[in-house]
Length: 79
Image (cartoon, rainbow, N blue to C red; front, side, top):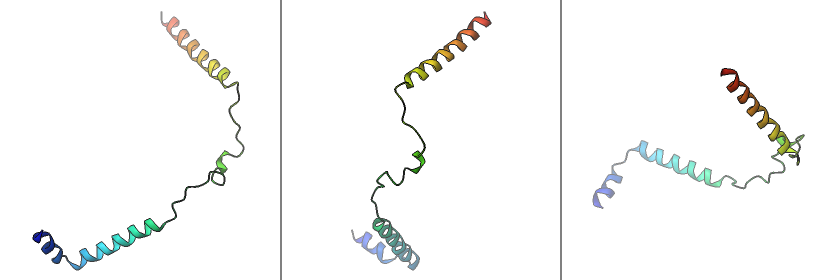
């Protein structure tokens, strides 16, 4: 423990200044308002978009059929 105390006594002015600056920055970060956005004012990117309809599964089925159709076409054309 004595070595640790003695080590603190030998700190340079630069080390002390850096320590105070880092403490000030940490305190400033802690003082910043940490409230989360409510999601209403911040969601302007959602304006003009629509919710997914109940027919979304139809579009997924059409895309899957098209992919499987292309795979089948390529597999049978190579034979």
